[in-house]
Image (tube, rainbow, N blue to C red):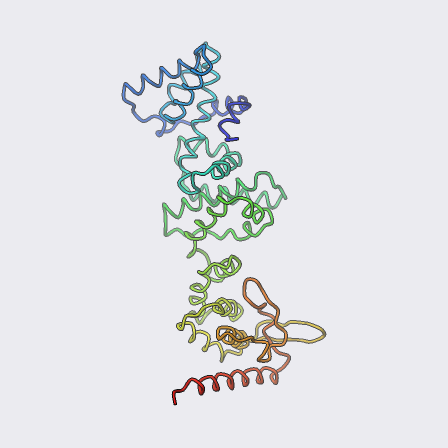
Amino acid sequence: MPLVSYLRICGLVIVIAACATAAVGANADEPLSQETQNRIEELVQQLGNDSYRARERAADELLKVGMPTKAALFAGMKSTDLEVAIRCRRLWSEVRIEAGWQQVREVIGDSPASRDLYDQMFLAAPAVWYELAETPRAADILFEERRGQLQEQLKDKQADNWEGALANLLYFGVRVKKELPQKELPRVDDLLRTGRSQQALADIEPLRGLLDVWTSVTRTDGPAFDRLLVALRDRHPQAVQIAREILSDRETPAKHRQYALLALASSNSPEDEKLIDDALNDSSSLDVLFTKGLVIKSQLRDVALAVQINRNGQDPAEFGFNYLRPNDSTTYSPSSLGFRDSTERDAAFEKWSAFTSREMFEEEPE
């Protein structure tokens, strides 16, 4: 059931309390034509009509008019007609809720599922949405407040309306980037990786769409390595571009470069060949893997070789990578791309060199 309908049925206490602390803002006080003002006042009077249908029609029309009804509704709250007073209080709450929906729907869509998500967003921060209907606030401050709210919930192990709070965070973040495209936002990967977030994203299609918008507008925010890990986790195509950025920076640590190399495993672009070839000569130490009593040590050139083999449609295991472990995000677990000693490593490189030489010879024209 939409939140407006819910409030009409059982939200009187909340509505009355909210009206008592309502803020004053310019959006609700824009000048109206005399004709419009007269019509609004007439509709407010209709809220006390003996006919239930007439009262409901008047309420629906006032709701469609929206924020310009503020002055008339506030006047109606003081009416000696209890029906008019109660309905005006209720409508003022509904009008502000609808004002938020008109903004949010532009980002998350206009489907029933999108409206349900907005209802959760409102319930996660009702005071914020009531205030925003009348008084604009800086989107970056709203974003930081929502981020703090979620981090506190995570710290205190609270799961109350996590979906709505998460949607608010992403929505206000998107607003920041739309209003201030050059402003860099902090990463929220720790919040997105939680089980609650993953479950919400799996269950709520509009929330997934909102995350896609967030990912798109923040794709250049934060350290490149952080962005790469997120893109790899989500199997997003932008991982390849971020990987090129990382590999082109000679100051990038080897442990970051290995993930960038693995991001290129699925790339067919010739421009990536040189980035991988450069790493084939880099013996920087990476990880140590303990498996079945063996100690496997990897170097950056090992990762580059495995990626080169994979890009050419071959199986690294056929060239001496005997400890491979698959990984959904990076094709292979980085620590499994190593060797017991230099003898194994040299053999793998020599076997690949022989294979590529044979391939080149077979391709030469007679």
